[in-house]
Image (cartoon, rainbow, N blue to C red; front, side):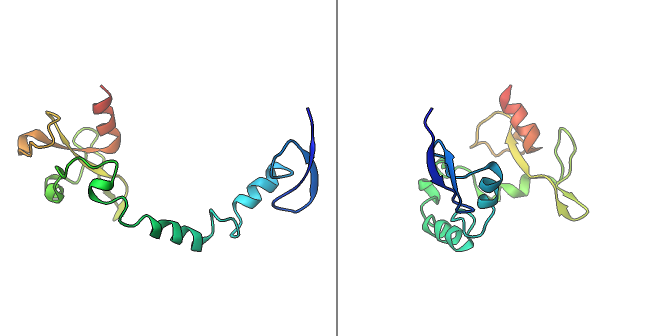
Amino acid sequence: MRFFENICKNCKKFYKGRGQNFCSYSCHMSYRNKINNPQKNPATRLKNSLSKIGKQLGDKNPNWRGGISPQWYQQFRKSACEICSITKLKNGIRKKVLNVHHKNHNRLDWELKNLITLCETCHQNIHKH
C-alpha cells in the first residue's frame, strides 16, 4: 500500500496517508464543526436554501399527488393519537406530529367515519402491515 504526503485541511500539517483529507479523526470532526466549513457556513446554507425556492412547490415536489390532500384536513385531526393516546402538546410544547389516516386508504374519501388521528409511529406501523 502506497502512502502519499498530504496537507491536513484542518490543521494544515503535513502527514502521510492514502489520500485522506485529514491527519486524524479529531481533525476531521473539528473541521466539520468549524464555521468556515461551507456546509456549516450560514451564508452558504442561506444561498443553498434560496436556490431551492419554487423548485419543490406543487407538482415540482417529488411527493406531489395531484393536489388531493386539502389544507382543511386539519379540522379532522384530533389532539391525541387514537391508538396510543399520545397527545400533540405536552406542557404547551409540541411533542408529536399527528396525522389524519384514511381507514380505507382512499385519499379522496374524506367521510368522518373513514378518518382517524394517529401519531407518526402508529401511522407507519399501520402502513407496514
